[in-house]
Image (cartoon, rainbow over all chains, first blue to last red; front, top):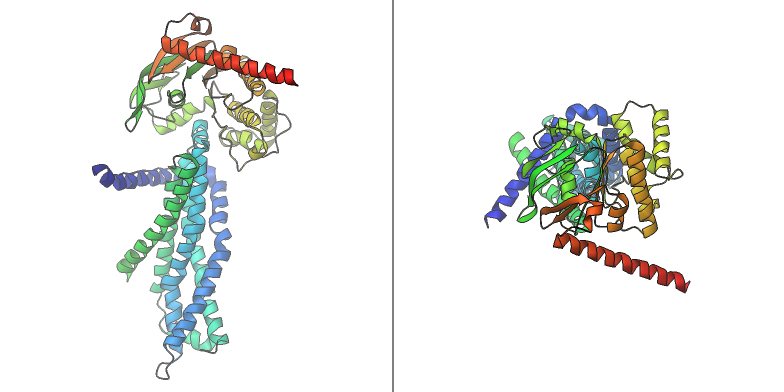
Length: 250
Length: 258
């Protein structure tokens, strides 16, 4: 019973130590810069198509459904733009991207490090005298912190773009009406909050996946467990962090 | 010299090592034998600081691995080459990339010098032609030899072999044993071989340490094994001889049927 209660606390402690050791080796990144660059491509650039696809559909659907709900002569059409653009910048653009990346990036990192752990490749790195946490964990977490805001920008641009396009093609509102509405209620705080969320989600997804992968046990089954847990935990923590950031900054 | 002083290690409720002490003398080939699960690999991982003992000390050339800061441990680890049980080759890299890996990070060699050194290591393990192959394209024995080439690339002072012949056919096992002897002689390294393969022990070792029931029960030379009175070691050796005899009989039977 006590062990079951202490187990999550132990996990939090272990996670904190891992992250502490990763950031303590930040001065070694000049040795591992090539690895950081590779991870930035894998985590960021390679994720652009799927993030753009999700953003495109969510922008289009949001425009259509907002137009449907506000279909009354008493509300100006520009309001659709006023709702769609901030919704994407504040919430949809970053949360949908976060969920997709929890599956794509989180699962990949956990599976990669988990396989390296069970096949003793991490031990081999350590036995050579290499700092395996600095070499494997730090570049992935830094790449997440650098590239998730970039993906957030992609998500917003594509989401709002397809919102404008769908509104125009579907005959709900013109491009100028959409842009006028979007500008009318625009606050710099909206993209700032989205940016903070993207940084937070980037850290959550990569760090949780690194933690799960790095401490994988029990062969192929362990790799499967780590991969699933990395994706599921990341999604749960994204939801919690989304609320926390909103409560703190709004 | 590696000195292990009264180390104990448990994983949860499972006691793996209890008050184990042993020394590995410079230039010798020490075989650590014992049944599966007797803690051989756990002991070996203490030699290079991959595991920390619950109590006791491990000294490498007089420096305590257990109390040293991480940076010093990393520095000490550079004196070691480790051949892991499954090879532990980086599957994202080619054979060449695997052997060149430590050289790129820990030496000031130019790319041409690295290429020459990699080829030299591949020649030493008699695999001159596989530089551009991926680990997945290699057989079990070849993977172990490539891992050995990687282990010797930095010209280590100590080489640790974790089950170097496990899962290999007798002929490939003999090749690996020959390589261990050859490398020890050529490079003048201290070798520690973790194994339960008595063939390998007889071929390779100068001294033998026998682990049983969390404890180091017997240490002696290869010649002394057959005269020892330890019942567990005698039983282990007898079982191995039976296996060897059985394997030889099977080999001769299959040979005669062809």
